[in-house]
Length: 485
Figure (cartoon, helix red, strand yellow):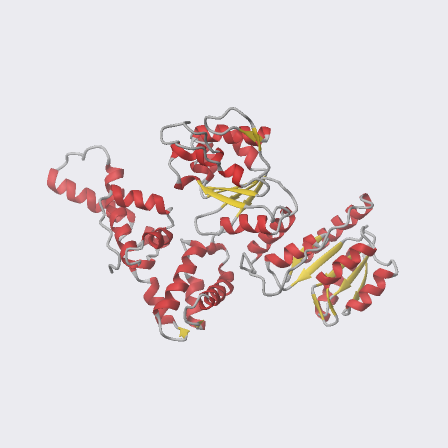
């Protein structure tokens, strides 16, 4: 039967009662208080084997007291609870020495498991190094990730545990979920935050230039190399190198990257002298790397080198409860940038929470900015949401499979026209490409019309890389006119 004394500090009597009964039924002795001063008196007297403390208390702050507790009793495990469920709270708790961070509301079974693990670690570990507190943080600091859902809380906890390491991380998730934001958070709150954060998008660079972009090149290494150039690895030295859309990396560059990860050094294109690298690698992709491996498009050994810590970002449809926080954040951000200050009406917010968001957080942000810029009402209502979600700028791609004008209907129209003209004769090869072209061209035209010919915004709307969109515009022979509607 578990043994140990748990010190619980929370100003909510109901939480104290529930936790006391839950842990007490397992066999722990629980001493609970609604005062930080009482908790400190108990800790100073050497009492307790595990501490569970809330952040905001009437006479103090659990996060602020963490360094004091760790200085006095470095081996005492501290579990921080908080209703302020943000990434900053999780990072602060971890960096200041908390054993774990538990967002409210929490699962009692999970709390019991964390207490059990904390006691095991306390019994097995003596004299661990004191964790340093974060300095210079202010309440007004920008929050890099938004959301209070269970899915986002797990992301916060993982990020908080990773910021103090140099482990290689691979972030997966659909386009628009915020993979670069997570990468930046790992850098900005990590021990390399004094170094550079360098990002490179594999899908945005011609394949023949990727090795030069990554590793640099010597003068005369290839046609057009009129001078030597440093690569992204050298630029990121001492900091973080973010390899976005890693699934689009060509085979030759994969081989060279694997060698860097194995040996910690590289050579420039055309060079012979090995160069040591000191950059943390964070990779990201919206593609299934396992599937690419099966197709022979991605090296399996590189996959294991990159995938030391896998981190999946959930699509927005899996965390719809975060939409109010996201919307309010984007409204505040827009006002801070000089756009009119707005609020979202309750019916409008309900409509946003009912929408599937195939373009994820990026799509929501674009919508909020458009509503802020184009509508004169101080309170955005349901009519505005109806109009925007029904507009060409916001086609519901998630429902296309059941709509009258879906992909199957487009293919059916194509075949009907052909058989009507040619009888029972089968069309020539290339049906897939012709149907794709029939759908792709009007879709891009609609997006360009909705963004008045702004290719950068159109690419964001479609969830495409802007270079990919420009290539499609060129291949499809689309004439782009700025200011079109």
